[in-house]
Length: 292
Image (cartoon, rainbow, N blue to C red; front, side, top):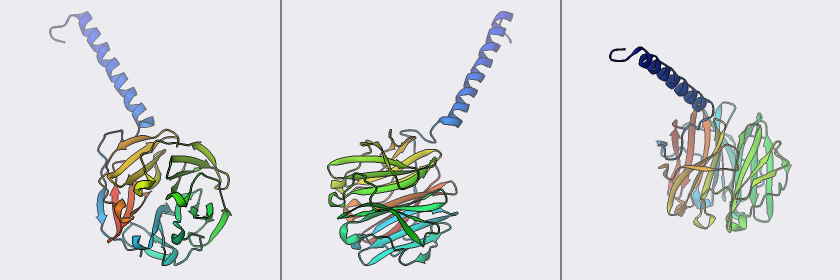
């Protein structure tokens, strides 16, 4: 080393080695336990298609939910003028109707809400409406369904414009439930029958008074939720345990409108996050992100 004594040279060499060791350790920790993205980092959702079809209508108080199952995307859509139908797609663009009526007890006339998630090789649906609790249904093929339990006992009310969404992570089903005059609570179940509360208030910024919507999904060992309502964009939150949530970005840029009774759902497939959002005067739009 030019200009350095022997001792200084040895010291510089040891410092460089220590620096490489520390950097290597940090990179290893990041790869093993760090979040795919952190708060404030750019997260992009790009529009793929302005209307994927699905025969869904916000004018009929329509409900829409998507999940990934058996290597494909599955969508379930219902409104006042029709029961809940099932569709599947390999890419989110071309959809095939699997059933015009899957038989789940749900009513758009009673402000009903339903959400579907793939879990342990089967599909599970949470469905609630006025004058009934949140029921759980199960299917092995997306077409034939059985009711597991009529009321799982979560704090939720269709009379208070309640929203609920489910996802699967680390061997458990997870459910988020929110309504007027209460925050968004989280619940967990191993089998879809027995549910335990995780936390009564997740801190997710969502408002039933502002016709808010949520889209829960799981990826890379974490739960994520897209949450939007009137006068704010669709934000993205993440949690490793369903209890502690961190907002990653306040506005993902997803085009969605709570003023037009919008619906929104998300699922992961082939390493990408697929978001479907619809509202009055527009079809179901398809957005995609690979940055999570």
